Length: 421
Ligand code: F0G
Image (cartoon, rainbow, N blue to C red):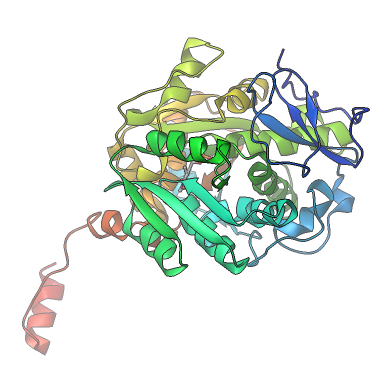
């Protein structure tokens, strides 16, 4: 039986394991060596795997900058790095006042090297590839994973194949994957179908899979949570009560929780200090919200998904078995928001100088909705995760406001246009 309670990470190493790092099935507890062979799921029950360590981190073990500051909680000292992590925690005074909570901050993961949080996972994931000695990397993607894998894979000198749902990936992301040299295959299907296909290829040994079903990706991504805790203590003077994040494949949700469970197990964090993990999905792609609302133990796959927040246009979140306990055990919640609410929140963030892609704004849109429903208390300190930068999706940004006007090239015409705006 799966045990993903907050206090479920123990220090005890299984007798079959030699080193200080291993993989454990979250469903049946079977343990595997981390780098002897390629493995994505439990060979016995197909459950998701989790990276486990003999030594769990305390805050004083962290030193340096970026993702690798947290190497005491990672499988390696160093990775294939393009200086990822260390992203800003922004104040948003106008949105904070409007929502009417004590403190609101936006953790802008779009400030990573390729413009999204995926870089935190790839710096670790591509390092694992070097350990395993594979050469052809692949992912299915709504765009950001492909951009990040293309950059990190090419930095490591490896071949990268990306499978994208044709016509449903924002232009900036395709441009990145292309320039970094990935082979881009646009499939006549949605993200979930792309993931089904690339998973089959990975299981046949044709490619090494770097989607978030790969447990090492999530190790890098859990550092978002560590950074939020450290920055919060320094800049706000306390830990957040809640972290609100956009959810697609639910990797980040799982990763944040994993990091917090490790800190609890090491004694660095009290159970009651763990922030409430609060998941936001787009209405047209919200199977996690459905599962949380109905109290189900599993997420049911949605075959038809649609949203302008294309990054989270996902109907079969592969990390749901890790993410549902993350939301429930931390006393968080899940809610869906409309595309209109998402785009309005994107504009509000832009008015505070913070440029994000639509999916990222789902966290602010969700927070507003939860607040209006009375779920968020007045005194809360909330961190909203912004997952990708504005330039990822220039089309969405260009049509957010009035179209630029064409006028004659004269001082008079310019002045007239300014006054008549
Ligand atoms: N926000 C952005 C900007 C994303 O690109 C993604 C996922 C998410 C949120 C959701 O994160 O999957 O951990 O719940 N993008 C993936 C991709 C699926 O292929 O780029 P999650």
